[in-house]
Image 1 (cartoon, rainbow, N blue to C red):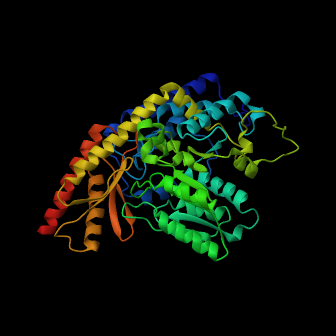
Image 2 (image 1 turned 135 degrees about the horizontal axis):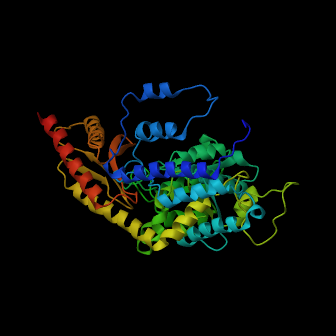
Image 3 (image 1 turned 135 degrees about the vertical axis):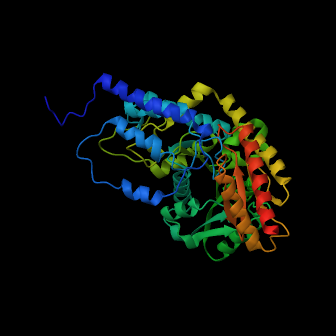
Length: 477
């Protein structure tokens, strides 16, 4: 009987569909090591134009959709899950998290409030509490899972604004370094802090925020009748991997009664490795902290988190009541009381299931390995004739540029460094990207994929050396 309103599938059909998807996905992951680190983008505009289509009134078979998806469209993108992806900040996309998403999406339980799925919300609370422990935050801390660092920072700014400024928002000033992530300014604007109230603080020769300049800027704003209320320091900048003097900034913020937020989207998870904690000294003193599990915990993109030292400050921002919702006056964590979302899925299952399967000690071993690989590779790259190391790895990212007698100007050095990034990536074994830092363009290498091992770093060193030699040889000719 034809029943177009019936959207259900039989168990046999669902099993067949699931097997088809898993087979494709596993085959894709098994081939990551042999795929180019960056997809083929030739003619990509024409491809995108050809994909525009009217709504599909009739259904299509699954295989007819999976074929182009895996064979044509997915390969024509950055090779983000591959072992040679050393660009931007890698996110590996570990397999157990995909299983967790499948479970979460098929179970389709609502976790916006504790009463709707108490046991599931408790698993998410466990995952947040594990992160709280790794960061050595107090038991009073609370947090939320977010789609990424940008929303974590938005919520942190809003909480700080609510506590420190109340309704006098226009007088508030916020402080970032010149190397802070651009998403902070955007988050500030969304939280009601206009761009002319965001102060940019100079950095030192190691690209770290200058605490003396921060102190002067705060004093100047107070003298002008404004209300400094929040400072952002960074545990690993995107451009150079610099770690701000977090402890000194924390000390200043305590003295000046300012909210101190640490952007640990890239680097904070190194703090879970006890022997690496000195690299992030002062991090546990933060009032709030951005975490990106899709970076340091190798989870799929779209997995961010925020921790706030005083959980009541976060609750004061978000807590609300509605006649149709039950009161939550018990001891248990309730996501709706600490974040803006009500219609939410089960984001914490990604972290809970993966950590339960692997154990945190394996994560510590992997993070320690990534830093070790970055330090070793930076030492080898620094030996290459023509390479100047601008930023040795403070965590697992290093930055450099080309400088040679055949490159007499800054403009020529910048152009050569850009060319180096492009030519190394074109070789296909690793993908590198650079960053404009002041007037200089820097090449950069970031090691933060669980699939990146010694072999990939050896390939990176070899390709940088070969292309540097070729570029300088051509210049000399």
